Length: 472
Image (cartoon, rainbow, N blue to C red):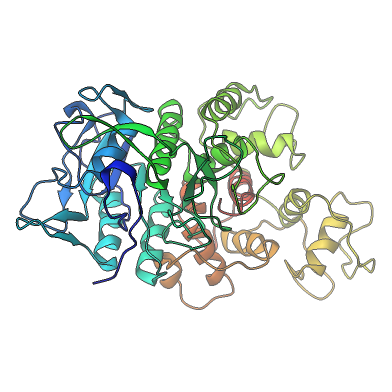
């Protein structure tokens, strides 16, 4: 049994457990955003039946998911509200799935699951319970492959994981919050100019949110107030769910970008270890989402509800591509080697290549892709099809595209185990595929991975857009 961290949580005075995520199949007929609450269960005396779906008590399999401790109910009421306690939830339409991992046995002693159990709960949340968001108001001081792989699985399946920074008031790091694809949340102080004294500060913290004297409910359905990063996490989860209510096509990557890049910046400019990107700003995030949804593109072949619309808008606004004509984007047109390295070069900010000697006889200084090819060569992104040819008009396949992008990002490691990559065998593109898969690239592009298949323009634009946030 792993030892989990005890976090102070105000009036409830309970252990701040370790928990994990998952997504799935119960109640998919409902259009409401489904949220896995991996916690102590949820009290039906406090939370309305319309906000609850059937979950499971993993730690006490023969016991219901009724909350005997209080932590999970407090988290749930912040998200969906509690009529009995007079608490208005941030996302009252949400459907919560209680997945109990920590509870009290009949003799009154507390029992907690271990990390393998948590990893299984995460995968069940993804594969059994149909959740789009997983709230993990807890953390463990251990990074295990099993946990890392479960979190990566959620990302691959399009599920956002939100977890807590911890309440030690120092630089202590907890998992899964420290994993790169997890939205890690701390608590803002009452002045809203920095973190609360109890909120942990480190490079994995992405956002701060309210978490001091928050109104919520106890298992009896009574009003209480609570403090802690557990509840800040619930706050951010609810905001993310509200964004998904408006646009269900948002990927975890897009949700993280919306929340982080619209946060109110405090402390040092930009990202810092005290406050992450700043204090979450629901109004700004919603306004940005509504604006992006309403942007009029000049391309007649990009539908308003196309899953790749955001990526195309980003590519157009950042000068990565202007389309194949003034009115067409040609999403399904194969992407050539010249186009691919040019997209990568432009996404990198059009850096001036340091080398001036051109080794390729089929690349002229007057070509639009000339500097991009030299840059790609010096960065080791691609060396050409021979010592003297680049073959600019040859179509790129999926293996080449993913490898080029991975190399352009300095060959980052994967976020966990990729079953897809493990089944490929040893190839030049295997590590690149593992990285892309565990960060949800293929899910974002709504595609499988076929190494030799020619890559359409839409895929390279989606991959590029997805990579620009570095996973957060």
